[in-house]
Length: 377
Image (cartoon, rainbow, N blue to C red; front, side, top):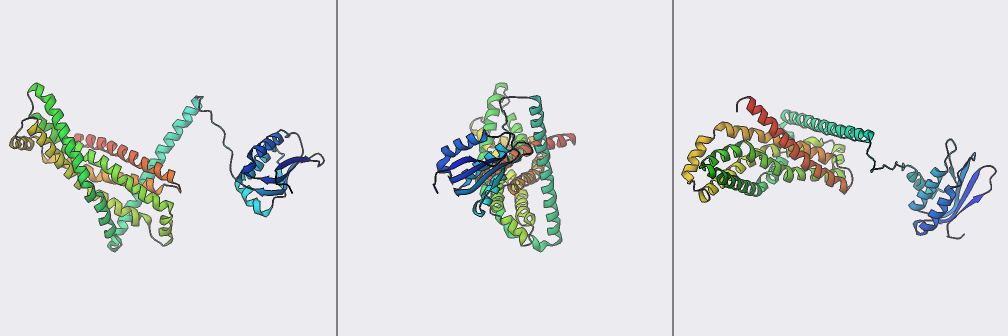
């Protein structure tokens, strides 16, 4: 039998019968493509169509797809082309190729009202799915927390302490450095502009209120979302890809209680600490710039700061921290558990975790601003 591929039409009454022979592999791609294209033109009004592959000596995925493509092309309404003589060695390959569904080519150059409405609907459905996933994860974490309260021995203290070290202790240098620089920049810009009105000292009021109420906790939360939120998503996503989470369920463990709850607890405890350290670093940086650049003595800076701020400003900032931490943790864990079995999926969900985490942090900051303004704080 010749190894060269052939596709010939054979006589079989009123039926259209094609006989494939030889080697149908990717090495003969140009020849096979041409033969299949010519055979596709034979589709007509035949009562039955057969493709005999009993004499095919070798078949790979490329050849199987061409045979399936030919079958689909020759299928005309109720008359469906049949593949005959398929050996047991290649039947599973052809069946697998047959499961691949052809997708319609979308003309991206044409913008229609229907297409726009469809895109809007898909976007709204995606937002609804995201919110539903966050609410579902929040409920699962609260349920796991209640179970731990009832059975304290099930709480994984070692894991929580480990994540506290990763999220809090190891993050202190970068948090302190960035907030220190931000405090310096705010003070410098404030002095530069207030000096035109002879009001250099008012930069202390602006710095104290802005850092304690807004910038301190917001900036720290954004950095934590980018640093720790992405790490949570990558860790959980890698476990999902290696089927470690399925293994935990098989062994009777709840992944929320084992993996998510310790991370959430560590983040909720760490963010207020980091927010406090960041606020102090920003105030120190602002005071240093006010002294060296604005000529405001440290004693005058501290006296003015004591008069400008109150405990309410500190409470407003520190109350936001654990709520923002919970939002970051929930978003990160939801995205991590949604990872599929590919590196591309892991990268997409890690990016989505950071973007959504920062978005929800800013939204929560706006909600808190409205709330505290309504109660006079």
